Every structure is written in structure tokens, then in C-alpha cells.
Length: 243
Image 1: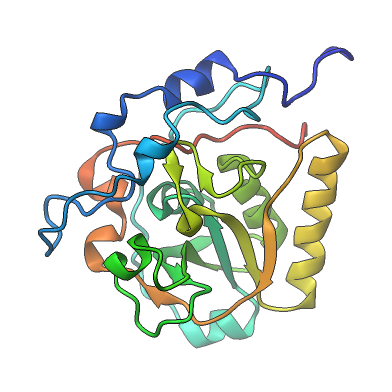
Image 2 (image 1 turned 60 degrees about the vertical axis):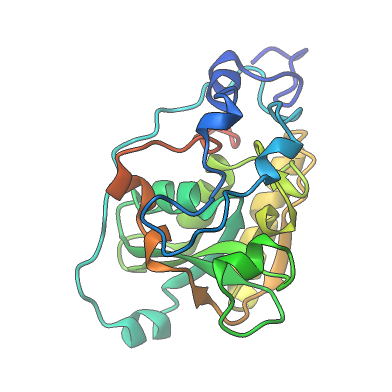
């Protein structure tokens, strides 16, 4: 990268192409064909048809990678006791789940809702902005194989942490960028990553919030891209840390 080039100046051709998919063909985390609902798809995507202004100028996005479903049994209580659980919100949970589940050492990623004021929210509660929840993911990982910093760093690489109130074409409070930390150790790591990004001229808007109750999303949202054979439309891994 030359000294005169900021990583935030313009959208890279590759990422722009990814985000320029016609909105009529994107689902914007709307109910899929197999969902038990007759509600029309979300129109939130129509609010922002262009790519985020803060997309990188010269960092090339990676490909979508291979979709995986990790459903092997493990001792949830033991993993949680070892600190192997993390929560992230970065736009449509389908894409965040897709990429984080590819990390070696991650045991399972679940799509769901966090941060609202309604118990057991449905997708429709979140879609209408009445419950106050973020679309989030719960990540179970084996601390003996991968640490929290690796998972959190990947989260910042697969979504745009500089875009407020949405992600790509998906606009709305449920798509805000946030890390829900389980304690001081995760907070310190997360804030350290944010400071690294700010030092590279990224105007990060990601919130760092205490973890709250995680409500799993409906079954048709789980492992969406792996089941459908599709690829994320508003998430792409980008080397934002330069290492």
C-alpha cells in the first residue's frame, strides 16, 4: 500500500462487484421459501442500494470459502466454563455464521438474537424493530485449538465495522455492528482490535456491549448458506489488519 493510499478511500472493484448484486435477487435475511411464514420479505435492503462508502480501496476480498455445518456433539457446559463462547453482530447473521464456522477450532455457530427487551423474540419481532434485538451469532470454540482473539479478529475482517445502522444493502438497527463480551478479558481483546483498526484509519462504529440473553433464531435461519448452496451477498473477508 502506498503512503498516499488510505484503506478506506474507495471501494475495491472486487468488493463493489460483490455488493452490486441486484437487490431484487438478495434475501436480506428475509424468510426463505421453507420458512413457516407468509410474511413478505424485508424491504430494509431497499434503503441502501450502494456499497458502503468505507469499503477498502486496495485490500482484495477473499472468496466465500466452503460452507460447512459443524454439528458434532460436545460438552457445552465445559466449553462455556473454559471461556469458549463468543457473541457477535455484524449485519445479516447468515453471512457472519458462514464465515466464522470455517475457522479451525470453532465447534458450532448459531444464528439468533441478542440485546433486545422482548423474551423469545421471533424473526418478525426483530424485523419490525419492535424488540430492540440485533441479529447475532453465538460461537462455541475450543480454547485449546483457537483463542478468542483469532475469532474476534476474523469477525472484524468479514464485515465492515465502519458502517453504521446496517451492513451492505441491509439497513436497520437489527443489522448494527456489535461485539457482546462475556467479561473483562474479551472486552480488552476486542477494544485492542478496534484500536488497531483505528490506527489504520478505520472509523470503527462497532459497539462493545455486555453479553445478554441469546435467543436462537428459527431453524430455517441456521446454516442457511450451507443448506441452500448460496454465498453471502454482503460479507467478504478483507485483510483490514495488514498482517
